[in-house]
Image 1 (cartoon, rainbow, N blue to C red):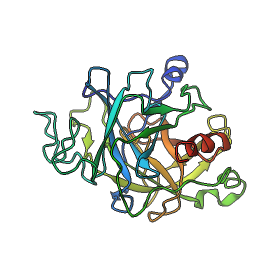
Image 2: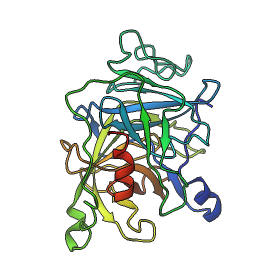
Image 3: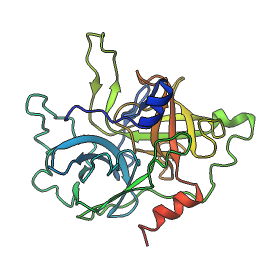
Image 4: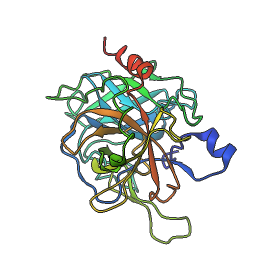
Length: 290
């Protein structure tokens, strides 16, 4: 199970048989992300404590971690989790031992990191917004409550209700900038390609531009962006659940979580994030912050 890749919108893939894929890591013109120390690499485990999948996400407070609903899929087998906040959380991963000896990813928090740059999530502290996977309203948002608080100088900020709703009403929508952040694959190849997938397992970020909010794939529930073009980058396998910030690299304002892609099997397509500025979604998230 260690090499399992998460597929978002499972039912849509099966029913429509189109190129809809999960998104797991930053591609294109990316840079190392030292701007968002609260963005973490999260590993999930089943009832036997076996690693089942990994995602990205962001702290909203010392103990409240925002990710995607398909990552926090308790019906799919997620029981416990562990989160690393080091920028290079898995960069020393050894395929032979299936372990990063510096951080302990994906099996444990290395000595001296528990409650500092690493935290655990116990059974019963993984929640999702009734995740369905049915496009457009996938309910693809999740919350994890950490066992050990991570004290940082800043955390991800929540948007105002419907903050994105007026952004694509004019011809300048392609000038609206978003920043994506996460861990995972940077290059994905076909099964026939002799070159392996490229995964740094470190926190990367890139800027993308607004494509649409109101198409049939979005319908007010999702944010569609493109990482194509000079200086831009997108998402791929491993970024699921990672924050989508409104604005350039220094922004802390999270308006969505990375959810799925179309034509993105090789990490070269269009990216979709589940909008957290929807009033009912925002209220659900804030209920964990009370």
